[in-house]
Amino acid sequence: MHSKSGVLSKKIVLGILVLATMMVGVDSTVVLLAFPTIVNDLNSNFLTIIWVILVYLLIVTVCTTQLGRIGDLFGRARIFNLGFLIFTISSFACGISPTDIFLIASRGFQAAGGAMMTANSGAIIADVFKPEERGHAFGFTSMGWNVGAILGIVLGGVITTFFGWRYIFFINIPIGTIAFILGWKYIRDNIRIKGKMDLIGMMIFGVAILSLSYGAINSIASTFSNLDLAMIVGGAFAIPVFVFWELRAKSPMLDLRQFKNKILRSSILAALFQSLGYLAIAFLIIMYMQGVRGLSPLNASLILIPGYVLSGFLAPFMGGLADKYGARIIATLGILLMCIAILIYLNLTATLSYYVSIIIAASVVSGIGSAMFFPSNNRAVMANAQPGAYGATNGLLRTVGSLGIMFSFVLVISIAAYSIPKNDAFQIFIGTSKLIGNVSSAFMSGVHAALYLALLILIIAGILSFARGRDSTTVSDGKKRARQTH
Image 1: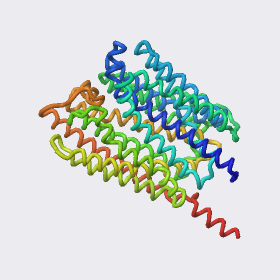
Image 2: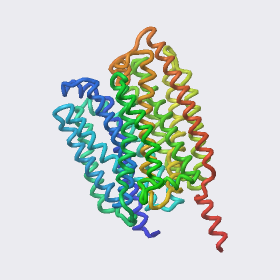
Image 3: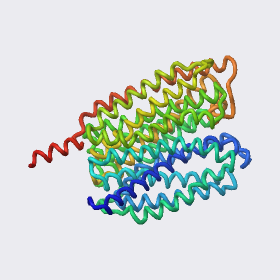
Image 4: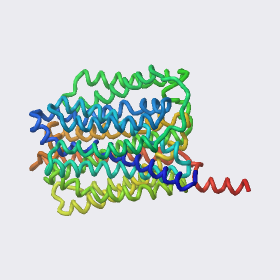
């Protein structure tokens, strides 16, 4: 396993996983700056086209945990590679879309392919890499996501401006084709878990997440209705039903007994709160730059690039530190840096002359923090998951991350709608409208309130991160055990 061919094979596998993560990250944000062009080209309206991004988030959130379990049972590599193929074909379908409904449906299939990839990527890392190597590997996949998310915003603006919005999807085709061929050759299933599909558990979990997600999303896409309230309440009720069923199922979709492990339980919850707070900050700052300062979407994204780039390059190094010293301190310090970034952002006002310097400084601090948190926390989750449940556990980790992204979006738009009309909030988010006069000051009050809420959410994440306890699967521990055996 330590031969040159074995090391090369590991590097190729990791490269494919990073590419997959980056592509999913790109396509989660790439359509943001293309919204106005898509609306005009397809003779649609904003409240319809907003579902191009919302349906992507919705399907990834609802399906990821189940697809991770399916990967456990039928082969993680098989599901991952199939996901790459579906993602690539669906990207082509998105690019040739003749109508808005066709585009939304194609994005749904694209999201399903993305969910198949993200649900099983962490499990493949756990299969291929030793416990003391996983933090470094997760650092690279974290780099892929960070680079992809910001690259999506930048590419969305540049490609739409110079080539047309359809090419934001067409660029996936050559990349996806090459990655699929390499994945089919190098990513193989060496481990297959025996068990049966828990169809009832999958259905209950799907209903719970779908109801919560759709109710929350639809409440911001249109007027909050009794149906939205019923969906949210029904989804919340379905969660304890799911727990009740899983604890009694012979072959559960998600073995909840493994969550007696404090490190695993705290790490999953820390990921949920960190994602919710951290993404809310990014959305708020984009709205501030576009709505209050009048920057174009492209210029606003360029200001955030230094933080994302630094985060991407530091993530593998920070993951290596987590391999050596454990996740607890590294991840918790990362959240602390994100909290400090919020305190820096709170200095922003509607008229501040040096706002760009503040945003760059804060984004760099938060970027370092995310580079510390993501690979460390992911490593802690997979190091404490049961081998037979790698896929389902990694899928759950991705699901809570997607929930955080989605509810961050809901949180930001909802708070903005207290001071300005909801449709104006959407227009500001995509950069087609600017606030003026007293409305800007009112909106800034909402921004500050949301930042304080994000700070509280991140403090909760930090407490959970620190409370997880010490990770015993580090390089240092491995050396100690080796010395004890001699």
